[in-house]
Length: 112
Image 1 (cartoon, one colour):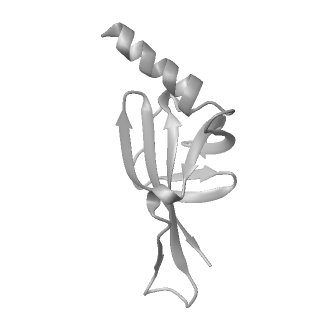
Image 2: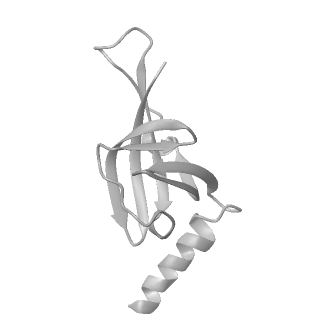
């Protein structure tokens, strides 16, 4: 199994989180630490939902997206209902998935 796990780790770095393939080097701030790491942002993965908020002013909605981060870059699995800042925009982490070195974050932000 060590060979398989190592191959997944290699594929995450050389294919999926490769800046020349899928990922973009992005400024991330989480849990008091700053990172400049390759991540994949997928607005389509969150079905580009824009849910209007009933308790707020007209024109305020929630925008959401899915972000893929390599555990080997972040070195921590973020917690649900905590804040993460990506390119100077603060998001609330709504759901966290972690499997084989891949962190999947579903994020929301209030916007106008």
